[in-house]
Length: 527
Image (cartoon, rainbow, N blue to C red; front, top):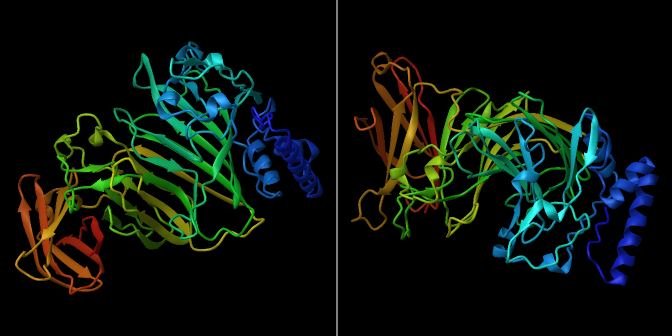
């Protein structure tokens, strides 16, 4: 596929051809087979031909032997400057969906290129061990009256893919998963609407030098088997730092599950990377309404970071919209799971008839195998609007991944609600905070944490509760535990005297006489 779409500048064409020839020479000198070298030059990966489980890994391994070459994202002039409204006026025709009207459990639709989504991705359909390149065809799309004409007829590729399936009812194919933009993808469970996103890989997130965004260059989608509950998607990743081969096995339901197998081929030493990253939005909640002028009580796609440590401790970290960029690292070894959770499912907490925040999915990551030493890393970015994704969570390996090596890892993603792993006796229902005494020059802070008992736990057998609250700085006082009959649980409250400190790490442990622990509360307070 010629990536020089609609380019009329002959000098630019000559430059691209010269660069392509140079890249081919580098690849051949590195021992890459001529066919793969030519594929890398032309960005032809999802081509018609034999396909095996190793096809994408072989392509990524070969691509990593050459310097990174940015994709040519140029488009024919008629598409190059599409506005938001014009782009939205391009809609895929459902009756042109892959596997439409076949009775198979999935259908696939494609996204057009344009607006923010100019980078091309290739797509191939795999069946019986053979891949067939899926060429762009403008007749796949309804071009509304806002779309400039004439649209191109040459194979300009697509900007992404989406799977549909009967997740909510057997007679209708709803969206199940979308891959579009860099290496972003998102899914949801039965009865939910889209919210947070996942990424294949995070590189240099929160780095002062700027973040690197790997992108998927090609997808191979296996034709689902009749009666099956799964669909398999293969993807080729590329970035200046690394290439990668990913395999996603998608199972829609409550929750929707994705088994992810990943293999990285670093071009450089990978030292600041994030595995299994999730990206979400947190604007404000009952725990952080300073300077908020909004009729809604809360606005967020996720309200907390949940971690199950290698020792089996269940940690809950309420999210925040800080004044300054905040990065928190929770050091661990062999983590059992982590994820960004939307725990509050009550419409009254949001009062938003359109956004439906109470129906947004949680995303929980369960590592497969031993991920070793590292840290669950949480990045919180200041935002003044709900349109921005300002929360990122991922696993940071302790050891760097050397250039020229091959790094394999696997994990499961659950798009749905709170996972049942390591529930213990009680979980945190809500966190609230405010000034404890408005008469003080430097007022103390009051924190209120509500707990609900895990279903099936007999409160009467647990014995009396005991709370331990600690702070990295400042002073904790007035630790009190009350029954909370409105939720059938407990309320823990305490006061924090910051003593002019700008940042304090807080931790609250609730246990019972029998030794059964509740979920551990951790929080970073900033002035």
